[in-house]
Length: 293
Image (cartoon, rainbow, N blue to C red; front, side, top):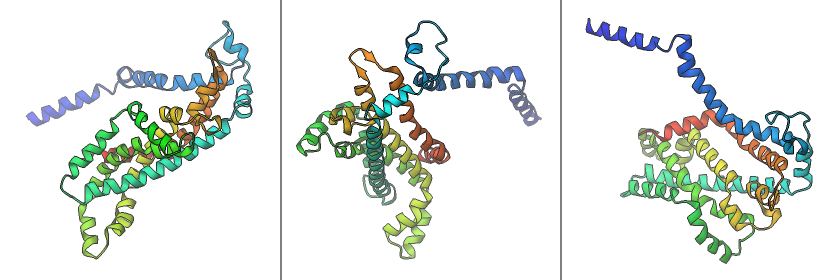
């Protein structure tokens, strides 16, 4: 009798969310507010990129709409600046840094989680704590190293320094995902005579594809948007990346070319949005596996 009463109370509690007014209060209105806060900056960026200068500087008119759209800002960005070179530099640096960081993170995470050596947990914790060090502190000693190696003002300066903050987090993420793979699979392979390399390539990595994609998306996004290192280690306009090139080349003193700035930000955000749209399911799966105990 008591169990039946509890079931009725639980059903009544769930019915609280079934009525339409309560759904609006508890679900729809919070979701609409969240979507507005999330998408409004992107909307503002889009309309600013297509607004002519007279509308941008006008005190009258509707600031939330474009009356006479123009492509002049995109033309200025693509033909009057070195934006195509900035975009190419960003792609090269991000892709190479991502793959290098993933390779190092796979080996580190596999060694820490699957080889079971003494002190592995402390090593994993130390790697994650390294990620918590702010890049604004690391770039000072890294600048001296880059200058002594003769890599200043080259793409290699960024390719070799980005893994300093990519590898720790990717290793921690992959450690959590490798932990979710049953040890029995590896033990059976060892009994059958497989080497550690064969186990890693043929068993662990195929099962860890969602985790690899999740870590890869994170590393690619962080490399794409990185600003401090790119600003410090790069000075030539033709070697700059998109975040640095837009800010340094399209801001002249106290004159802000808002249309070109927003056009550059819009074009620069599209590759990351495309990557997320293709791999969002794997990204969520990888993040879920990473937090499993």
